[in-house]
Image (tube, rainbow, N blue to C red; front, side):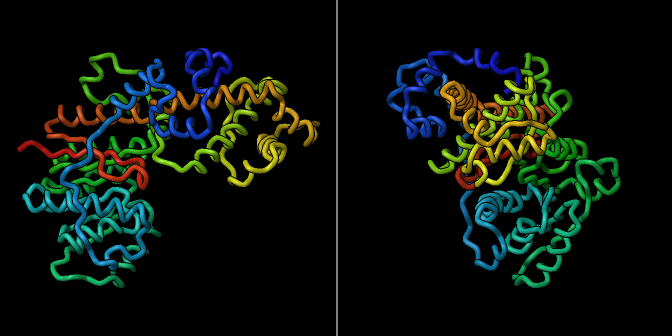
Length: 391
């Protein structure tokens, strides 16, 4: 969107023309990273194959679900339940092999994961979170939930992990030699904080799932590894970090149509601002309720111009006529097709970021593996880094 239309020139014209000849259902398949028959043999298909190959990560082999009573997941949503079912057996196996004796759950919230690990796998767990209200709820639930035989303790510790890092004494008490750091979707630089605390305190290891890569500082948070630093790493701007964050999971055709509608309105707003207000730089305007996007374009743009404090004399009819112009439709279609191309690289960028973290941990004396742990349809941020200190 920034510097439009110059940026469109970065996309091969033949790719745009190829995609423009596809039906909605075929574009939906492309968006899902499926190489359909109509594009076979094209340079775009080769591009997709390379992107898919570079982003392929195997599933964790020893990640079998262990059936637990329904009470174990009382109050736990489907996505979280699935994640716990996949993570808990892995950590339980580490404890059985005497590789860890306790877990520190970063951003543990109300403690669903911590409770399952402690009560059903006998692993003492610290649920670390800055939200006191979440922790209060978690403590109350511990009193209500059934406690089975051989259950271990759950301890709630209030700490702003990303900011209170100077509290060295408290962190030293939390990160002990045989403790194991668990970061289920640590946002942005929080993953780096967990990695660095694991290294500093020489703990047993960690299992970390990154997310919100757009919150990273492109200058200070990447790269971490000496290998990347010494081998001309890619310059990841805020836009590429955002793309890595938005490497979405599976969706329905209805989800796809809604995404397309949202983008068309957002693009049209940008084009309108460029044409009538000479605002060539991309302006953040935030999201709105989905029903707004399925209403008239005039309702959407009127609301956004008001939020931006932009005065105007345009009527609803003029707004809608602008959106319905053949020239506008052609530009919106081109921009949408370019984004379908761009989105192919989202997962690749995410894997590129995570490999840097893996290499950094290896350089610091850890055995490291990277794998998918969750079903992408349920939890798109499903790639976990497992690191265990070398004995």
